[in-house]
Image (cartoon, rainbow, N blue to C red):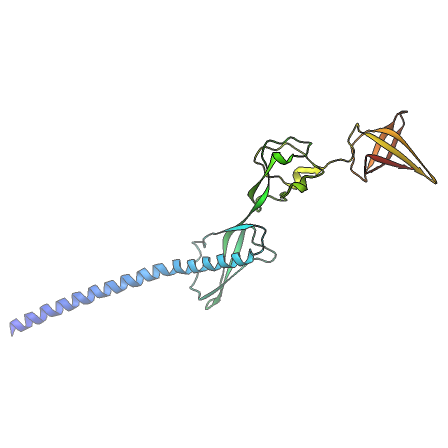
Length: 244
C-alpha cells in the first residue's frame, strides 16, 4: 500500500508541476499579447491617417511625401474598432500640420498627431550667381525639383521672367520666386523719351529726358531740351503723354 501511495504522490507532483508550467506559459502569452495590442492599435491608426492624407493630397501640384508622427506616449487611449482621421476646419494637407483621429466605436475619444506633407515639383533655380537689376538669361537658370511647401510663389517657366528684373542678387542654387523680382520699368532715369502734348484739337511732340523711372500708366517727370520740366503719363514705346 505504501508503494502505491508513493507512486500516487509522485504522479500528483508531476501533474502540479505541469499545471504550474502551463499556467505560466499562458500568462506569458497573455502579457505578450497585451503588450503588442497598443502597438498594433497605433499602427492601424497611423495607417488610416496615411491613407486619408494620400486621398486628400490628390490633385496637389506635384509628387507628395507624407510623414506621420507618433501618438503622445502620455495619452492612454482605449482600443477602438473604427477610427476616422480628419483635418481641422480650413486646413489642407500642406507642410507641417496636426491631423485629428476620432474614435467612432466603441469609445468616443479624439487624438491629434503631427504630420508633414511635402509636395515636390519642377521650378526655376539659379544655375549661376545672379546680379540685381537685370533679367536672368535662359542659360543662367535651370529646372530642378523643389519642395513647394517650403518655397512660396516659385517661378516655373522662362516666360515668367519676361519684363522682370531681380531686386537683389541671388546665389547659385537659389530657387527663383516671384517676390525676388519686379516689373522692368517702361522708362528708366536718363532715357530719351518722346513727349506728346495733347490739347483740344491739336497734338505736338518733342524729345525729352526722363528724370526718373516709371511703368506704363504711371506718371513721370521729364525735361525737354529747353530745360522745361513736365509731368505726364508713360505710354508704350517710351512715350510720355502730357494733356492740356
